[in-house]
Image (tube, rainbow, N blue to C red):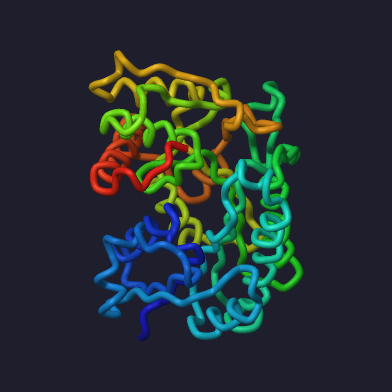
Length: 339
């Protein structure tokens, strides 16, 4: 019997690369990763040897804005499982590029699901939306459950509302096994530096390397977040498609440690030998026009369905994130902007 095959769109991202590693270690599946021809492969450094030798993992080029390329990827891979993670995933960037964000995330999801409907109609499909769909939530609505009203606070969040609804539509209209998730804040090694906790860690590593002054520039530090580790997140995604997958289901997924962004910053600074020197400075360019400032999930529905629970402690997540940036700064140094 041939091994099952998983397609990961966005394999070069933080989540996609960790998911590929998890599947290689914990399953016998073959993995096809979709990436753009210009995508950096840094996050795949741990498995690049296996890609080169064709050892259970391969790459196909595709772009969510190019219908033909998506059709080709799905026709060639014919997956049993699909993790649709590729997206324009930066909320702050979406204010500058709203149309690109909408096309990539909403129409891109339509292109993927149309291709699957034609070439792999029996695949079990995960469509990754975002907790940002809930946007500005009144405090009395916390913790946020799946039925909380959408109130998106950025073009990115609006695009993910579309992504969420498109996934659910294809399940209902075409009988496809599509499930959508709203993952709350998840971080760890390989987190992009456009996200708050990762830019904090990067700036601290650059301060330690004497590349910038001992000042961490910040945006809104009062937002409340529940933090999960990316390695717990990918385990959740695996369980989503393998534990009683239910067509049309939608789940909130997230960690168990709730804190403010300032708490995250304070934790990261506390790990630094230069903690006594570091100052904090608000940078107006890091403030969003509107902020989703209360992001605390009710994950009971997903936990009850799959038995998943987060395992990696908050402190380890942040420590590993800082170590990731220390390594990159020490090896790549002046390549970085202190953004």
